[in-house]
Structure formats: C-alpha cells, structure tokens
Image (cartoon, rainbow, N blue to C red; front, side, top):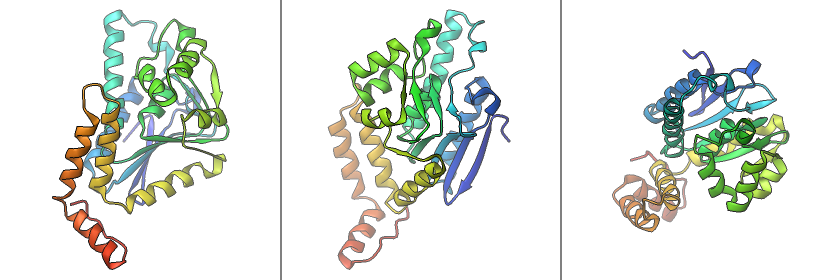
Length: 258
C-alpha cells in the first residue's frame, strides 16, 4: 500500500514506521503524503485505539527533510510546503486517539518536528534531537519554532535553534522534550505498554484530555472554558456511568467509548 511507510496493527495500536533507511528516513513529499493517509486511517478505523510513529532501523527516527527537494522551490512553493506540513502535523497533534513518537535515533529538523507533533515522546538511549535548519539558511517550517518553545521554554528553544546543536536523549529527558529514555530494544515495548494502559481507560475521556491540553497552548482558545465543556460532556456518556459504577462496585470498568 505504501512506498515509504510500513504499518502494522497490533493490539489495537497502529505502528507506523517511516521506511527509508538508505535516506535516514528523511521526509520527502511522498513520505508526507503517505503519513497523511496513515493518520486518516488512525482517525477513521474503529479497530485502532492508538498509534506509534517510529523510524526503520536503529540509526534514525527521521534525520530531517530531503534537502534535494528544497533547491527548486520558490517563495510561494515554500509557503505551500510549510502549510501542507502544518496540516499533517496538526492532524497528529489533535488526534482524539493517542499518538506516541518512539524515537529510535536521529530526530533532526522535520524529524524533530514530527516527534514534537505527537502527544508525547519516548526515546532510545542513542537518540539525538535538533533543529539544524539555520545551517541551510532556513528555519523550522513544520511547527518546530512553536512546539519546541512550548515543550522546553523560550531560552532553550532559542539556543537549540540558533546554534543548530544536537542534544542527546538524556538531555532531552531533563529538558522535558521526552518522557522516557530506554535501551533501543525496550523502545517499542515501552511505548506499547503505555498505550495498553491508556486503552483500559475511557476513550472519550482520553480524547477530552487531549483536546483540553491542546487548548491550553492555543492562543485562540480558552483552555479553562474548554475543560468546563469537556467535563460537562462526560456526564452524557455511558462511559461515565460505567466508570463510576465500577468504582463503587470495586470492579474493573469495561468502557465502550460511548
């Protein structure tokens, strides 16, 4: 089905692997188009409760964009490229189902931006992160200037983007860029284990959490008002009644996402 991705559905988690190992899994227009299709599948397929985005091999998650595509672009084409990237990465960020980045190596440029668009990140011990666009006379164009600032703060974001330095997984953990750092062999098992824990919770409530946390960082929304509305909406769901009943009856809840 895909030229540059491989997908596998396992225990209701769609594992999306960017599969261009000879190019360090670099993003090109084909990868972006196919990634958009894979995310559409996450949204629409009821058998999918969550997703993991990772890269093939043990060297690179996504080591940036395919620079050869940039040399021919006009200003207008550059704007269109950025807008397309924003649309796809916003779809990941706003997915009502959790999407984790399992960062298995270099996450640079567009790769770092892709990881940051996910709801959170788990890194292998050899992972490295960076936004080296200024080395090319560019800036991040897929939301990196905004998401990096949100995740690590203004000062660290400014330094990382202006120096084009890479940071190791341990530093990414201390900066708050990633949630966990594990050995390479434990990367996907760790991501899967977290998602299985999330799968046991009420799906509509999980979607509400994602919506509210995103609203906290959206200048066009009142996050507190969003929380009030999502909290109130919970009372119309069967899942709330199931969860409350299960708690009172001291049993495991069986949520249906209704």
